[in-house]
Structures are given as C-alpha cells and as structure tokens.
Image (cartoon, rainbow, N blue to C red; front, top):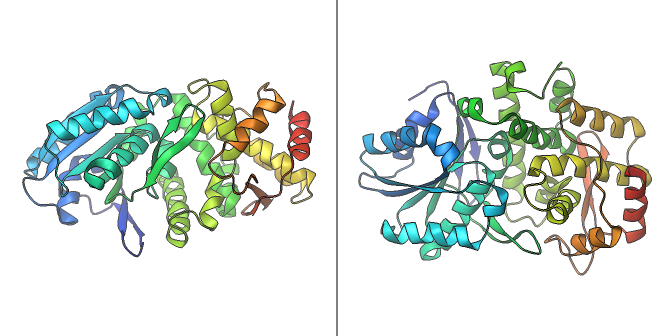
Length: 368
C-alpha cells in the first residue's frame, strides 16, 4: 500500500466514496477494496478493452486474486461508437455467466466509454450492484469517472440513455497515461481547461504559465499530479453540492452543448470527446462575447490556452438547421429551451436558458 497516495473525499449523503490518486496504485486495488469493506470470495467482473487490458489487465486480476477475490475479465471493442445497448448486453451476459449477485462488483478499467458503460451496466444489473472506476485516460481521470453519471448513446444524441450510479471508489494511477495515445492526452486537457474556466482561475493561470501542455513528456510528474488533483477536486466539490444535476452541476456542461452537436453531426469517432468540447468552449465563449458577458481578452486567453494544448478551435462546417435540430435534442433542454453555460470571466460561469436561434446563428457565422 502506498502511503503517498492522495485521497479526495466525495462526501455524498447516501453514497460517499474516495478518489485515490497514486503512482502504481493499480497494483493495490485488492488492498483498496479490503479497506472499504469488500470480503474474501467477492465476485468481480472487470470490464475493459483490449488496448487497455493488454497493459493493465493482468495487474488488476493478480491483485484481486492476491486479496482472495473471484475476478473475471471481459474485454470489449474500443471507441465511442461502441457505447450502445449491444455493449451493455455483452456486459450483462458476462455478469450472468459470472453469477454476479447484488453484493458483487463491476470494475471499469479504461477511459470514459468503458466507465460510462460499466457504470450503467452495474446500475441496471439486478437493479443495481457496486461499481469501481479505474480510469486510464486523462479525460476519465478528471471527469468521466467522478460523479456517478453513467450511460450510453442513442442514435439521435449522446448520453440520452443512462442513470446516476455512484462508484464505491475511484482509483487513479497517473502511470497509466504512459500508454495513452498522444491525441487522447490532448483531449483530456480540454476538460482540465474547462475546470479552470468554470471555477479555478489559479489552475487556468498555472496552465498558461507552462511552455507546453500538449504532450505528457513535457509535463513534470508533480505538475501532472497537481492538475489531476485540482481537476478531480473541482468535480468532486460540484458533485457534492448537486449530485443529480438540479443546479450548479450543470456548470460541468461548459462547452458540452456545442460539443455534443459536433460529435452527433460529424459522427462518433470523427472527433474525440475532448476535441469536440474544446471547439464547444470556443463557440460558447463567442456566444458570451456577443452578450457582453465577458471581455474579449478572456475569450482570447481561453482560445490561446486551448491551442497551446494542441486542441482544435475552429467550428466545423455544419448546416445551421442541423445544428439547431441537434441542440433541441440535447438532454439538457427544458420546456423547449436550450440551456447554455456561459462564462462571466475566467473562473466563473452562469447558466442561461434563453438563447435564441438567431444568437446561435450569429455566433456560428462569426466562427466560420
């Protein structure tokens, strides 16, 4: 057990848990499960994809066996396009074969897609069993694994099917980023920049002060841990205030309304989620500029930091009618009104639900 691990408490009323951040912590998953009360003989289904399981699957299984648990490993195909009901069926089939019971456990070992699907499968198997998140991508470490949002995509939109299902533990091992493709690392930086814009000016300025944040090799280990920790704490603090997204948790959707449009209309796989969010942040920054909500210098700083992370900032060529139709299908639409999280300054945002189609048109015209 690593005494140097960082612990972040997610102190929810009914489902509290810890986020544990530590180098080589994957090797201690069995010990961590013991600490939170899981007993010998526990049936565990580890869900991953081949790319991740080839690197870390044996390590997880060995640790679970060492702690006298009863693990099985299921590998699924990788990619956002796999985030569908067919994949959930495969997880449920494996859960049945493993004879998982209500006291059993699923472990998500992978990025946000694996985390979302495994969490949803756990939420719906036997009306809900335990799940542990072990994120192996930067984006999943700072966002997708924390907060209990689970789900799959529908053909008409992203994450339209899902459930809130909090994990028993989130275990983050920064060492796994060494095997992450460079493009995926950059995509994760989009969510970290998001936290800077919505609530953490110090984090934003810390990123601005770095020479290069687009590659893992140029970021010192202590800085990497700090930005992961700050981002995870930002998410945890918001989730503790608003577990089911009835208020401030909506701030986490900054850049996502436009981002989901890009993913939906361009086809899943054309752009990574973080890339779409990056473009979405630039777009909503322009929308805020039109309304006079923040200064042009702030919009410029946001765009420059996104570019420094090696992320796209130019809005893709999409028909306005298709964009408006896609936005109306967003899960955050209430009474026909689209909600946009818009910046007031770097470090502060506000939710607006009175954005007109004319404003969106004007915004996208300026971006094209």
